[in-house]
Length: 290
Image 1 (cartoon, helix red, strand yellow):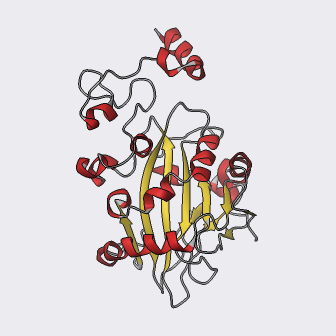
Image 2 (cartoon, helix red, strand yellow; image 1 turned 60 degrees about the vertical axis):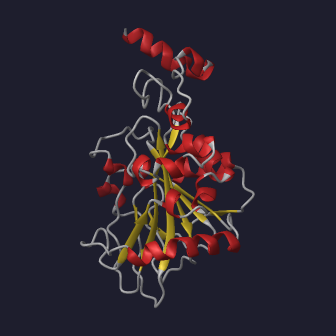
Image 3 (cartoon, one colour; image 1 turned 45 degrees about the vertical axis):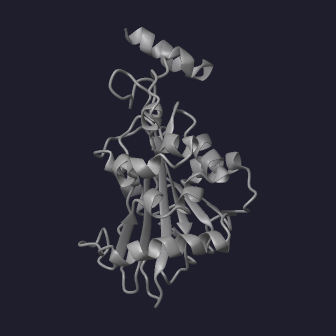
């Protein structure tokens, strides 16, 4: 089946609405060739040294290369791309904080079979999140063209709110897209890497975001050493997790703000009141709990 695409100037709120309804959205041509060329050149030495998977799920002909913030400076542009960040925040607008969950280049090599369809939120110990509560928002940037033959991501639209048994009869589509385009998909939708029947490697940049109160899949504080982290701007660092995950998550020592500790000028973390009016419902709930 054909999947729907948005133009690069699409309104992030419209992209988020489609994502909420169908479990995915594709925005074409969001990054230019020069950006993708730089990222490919930065990542290639690390990709070449990454091992292939050791089981069918990870892929015996698939390489997964992480720690992109430290290794590939251009990846930071994708992480903080305005359209992506605005879409993610619109989609996850039920929480007070959003954070980076993982960064990874996924290289599907010729001969790879199709990955088993799965839901990414299973990483949270298979916790049964309600249908209307999304814990993450994922992106897959096309570092190469994604085609039917080279293993473009398979998506089952509408499967986010149904059982796997019910989804078995639902048609899957493939996220075919040009290099520089990006696929958004939620943590509940059934999806998986496609089979690579071509002679070329399919490379995608998987950058995932999550609500601020869960543990990150990729440990950003070790994947990006402090000496590199200190060279990054505050917005990037806050997205990586150098911020409160909600009202009392992630502080350092005697309730110190993590970003200020990294910068060498420690200060107290914000209080609940300082989170502002948007957090009033959470504050009321906390007060009732006491």
